[in-house]
Image (cartoon, rainbow, N blue to C red):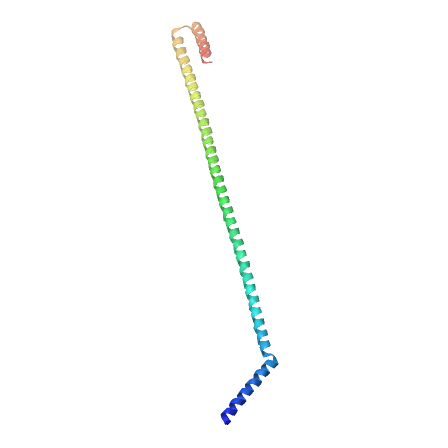
Amino acid sequence: MFDATMWAQIWAQVALVLFIGLVIYLGVPRMITKSLDERAAKIAAELDAAKRLRDEAQALLAEYQKKRKEAESEAEQIVAAAQREAATLATEARQKTEDYVARRTALSEQKIKNAESEAVNAVRAAAVDLAIAAAEKLISSKLDDKAGAALFNNAVGEVKTRLN
């Protein structure tokens, strides 16, 4: 009836049942479940921390992008203001240069007019002196001393009144 193979099989089944009973009695399934639960909780905590870090990183990224856009906008405003100021300064400089040139031209023209006037006056004075000298020679050679002196004094007075 029972041969050795069957006895071995029965003893193996009994040993298996005893082993399973011993494992259940010692609480190995609870320890395995607890260990797996702890590991799952640890993984969940790590996932939550990773998600939180990712959200923080995204928030920082958004903040830095906003700050970059604001800085770019501010830089554009500064450049535009600098361009406007440069244009204003160029216009002012051009106007000042034109005014300076106009003043210098007017001053130069005035100096030229004064020089022309002085030259004309000098030429007139030289012509008067030459005419007086020529008249004096001519009159002195043709008139006597008294008549010549009277005529000379009369001519000098007339020339003076005409020049002034």
